[in-house]
Image (cartoon, rainbow, N blue to C red; front, top):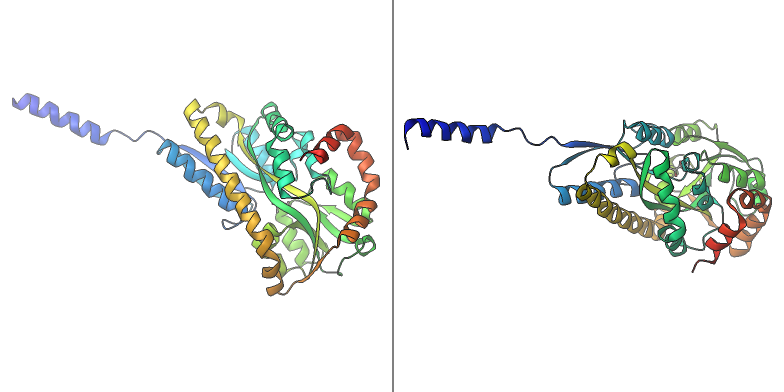
Amino acid sequence: MTSMFRNLATVGALTLLAAPAAAQTEVKIGYALAPDSHYGVAAQKLEEVVLAETGDQFAFRHFPSSGLGGEREVIEGLQIGTVEATIVSSGTLANFVSDTGVFDIPFLFRDLTHARTVLDGPIGQEILAKFDDVGLHALAWGEQGFRHITNNRNAIEHPQDVQGLKIRTMENPVHLAAFEAMGAAPTPMAWPEVVSSLQQGVIDGQENPLSVIVSVKLNEVQKYLTLSGHVYSPAMLLVSKPFWEGLDDDQKAAFEKAATEAVSAMRAYVDNVETSGVETLKERGMEVGTLSAEEKAEFQAAIQSAYEGYYETYGKELVDAIVATE
Ligand code: PAF
């Protein structure tokens, strides 16, 4: 090789070495709970599978424990494109796609299997598709479990035990109507304010699934836990529509695969905490009571008036179709 060719070869090799790595696309993912919660587990699985499928094309930045604000704020961030992804409860989803509220109706689902079948089936998937009309793209339904009541005032067995109870609800009209019908004094509140409001006695109680009560250690600020299972609590994996539209088909397929695996991880977490969580909370000092089938029926009867409103909003046919799903 002449010295000229040797120099050119060296320059070529150096150019290759110095070539900047293809720019990674940042994925900021925000969620309300800690990294070791069902949301954290799902967010980590999402990242793991996306990276495995795409190599180094994406760089994830996690914002757990409401690091980007309340769920509504985060979803609004997705709409304007300042946040790429989130895992949220159904708390404020009905403000974006009103039909999602149907899944917040108390005593709608028999058990986790029933809920998963409906959400993964045509009714759930049709509602997911509607998020594309509002600047969002819904990847999948996730899950939190069945919600139970915690409070500092008294043990709860009958609807009269919640009379006047200052209970925080999500900013969700379906939940609000149910607690009003029960005779409680519900206060809709964004999640980041809840623990301090319980600590300061601004509210007596709140309601959330075991996945949340255990991972947030609500036993530190709440004495009574009533296993009421009054409503199923879905979650959702959402990405920003501008972000989604910037992905190529392979990248979209990677996110879809990752979302399916993230949901499996989240549901496995919920399955586990639904069986182990009660013991954990008793060990941590909570007084735990379980509503019997008869007591649950009393609560169901107490919210019959709210059901009239649910039928009007969502259609009795849809509610009946969900109940009838095997
Ligand atoms: O109660 C809520 O607002 C939600 O269940 C929570 C805890 C933020 C998880 O999404």
